[in-house]
Length: 202
Image 1 (tube, one colour):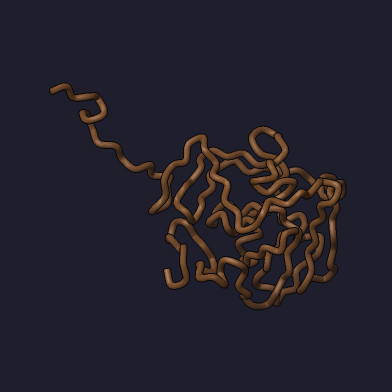
Image 2 (cartoon, one colour):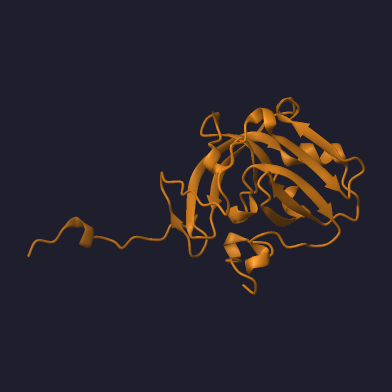
């Protein structure tokens, strides 16, 4: 009987960079959305931060691009099981936007909302300290495709990707946690991939 090389040699070892329950998507980037992809031109895009802040503020496309540029290079993880290594996003650190509005000391959480109405809740600590971005580009400066959230999406790569809303429109800062779309439908309040926080109770 002929034995192919695939059945000989050392067994494959799971990639140590994969959170539990995840697989390497390789060159693929699955398109998963709770809503229909909107026809949102850069000229119509805005981003607003309000709620428990010293001064509410809205940025349009040009104002956001006038801010200091920042980039993320690393991995992203989806609650459906795929992970993508070595991604490259360009945009502006969320710290820059938050510093401009000066969150109140009582602010502990944010509800991120999209131009489509989608929402996701996040602890404010997960959005500060160089951990989150408003992303405009992907893969060496190419415009972020609409199906992946272009013209701009929130990027919070250390959490499952449902916490990085596509077509981001703003943040509403609160002194309490308030469930977003998927959290209200049984998903975990925080969504840490390394702790497999997929569903409420995990």
